[in-house]
Length: 253
Image 1: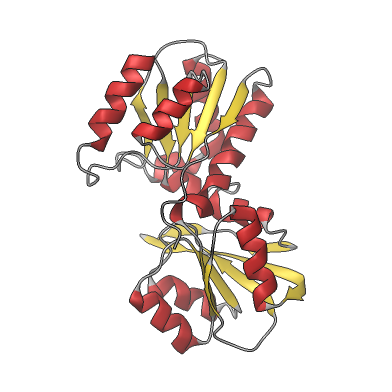
Image 2 (image 1 turned 30 degrees about the vertical axis):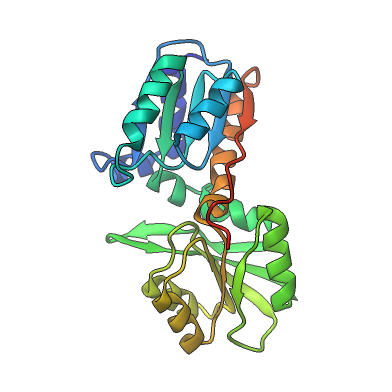
């Protein structure tokens, strides 16, 4: 697979979501090298550490969910210098990967073995909406917590805010800590809401609203969306090798 073929495939896989977020800095190449892509490394974040691990893996292309955002002052410049030094391309897909049908919320639903996804996470009128899924055999509060911890291989903070078994679940991975998102899940009669960040107000509101809240890390609630993307690329180009970069669980508490 060459770089042009990769770009064409990305357009095919993401469809309308690239158009939705064009010119908003939500996807694209941070650094592009015109070369044959034989090995793809993937992670949630672009950091000096993930670039170095991509280099060690022999990667020609590093794919992440996040860019090294400008507000993480100075890190992007260091990452680009390292990418140039090692002749590695880097591509990130942020919002498009959050809302495409195989994206971050869908991927986490799949990993926790949800029985049915009734609605996908989406973006409409400048607002984010969580995906909604159903367990046909409801889980206890602790069963869902243990399942999440097993999948993400890290501690999960959880608040049991009702006495119901968990049948219907909302997920918005990463920074799904806006109270309006949790309110939407409540209006969809969800028993629980899963995300990757919390604030005082999201914890307060979940308690007030009577919806159990589960919070993993931003990084590890979203890695599986990147994995889904990379696996789809590999289906089109089966000779491309893929390598998952395991990042530190620096958000865990």
